[in-house]
Length: 161
Image 1: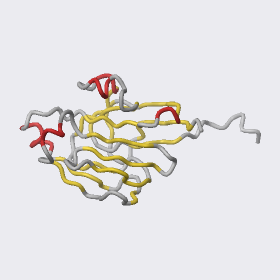
Image 2: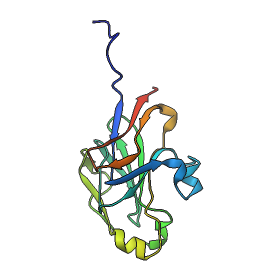
Image 3: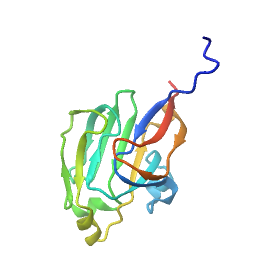
């Protein structure tokens, strides 16, 4: 009646990949582990398809297809960065499935990564998934452990503005 017993219903973001979610501090790149780009989690993928973690719009795809930026319908700026130092691969092992400006729904396939090829080329697959406009949100929950692309909620946030 007055909301005394209502549970917090924040913004939920699903995992963009199936695999193992880990704390961002464990990423072997200080740009991510020290949260210089944003805050979030990282995923070590076990399947090739990367999906949209929420409804939104694709605002940037790096020319090498190793990273994608999405603006959520709730106004969050999201970065999904596949692997560490994978920009050096110049696109090898990555295939885009969407284009900049496309509208996506949670669970829509957006990228594919050839996991075995990236490993052969010597790059870690640890993949940061961060919110770059963290000044606008408060983190309520982060999930670690086994996650499923488009299904497992990995971050719950409250919008500050």
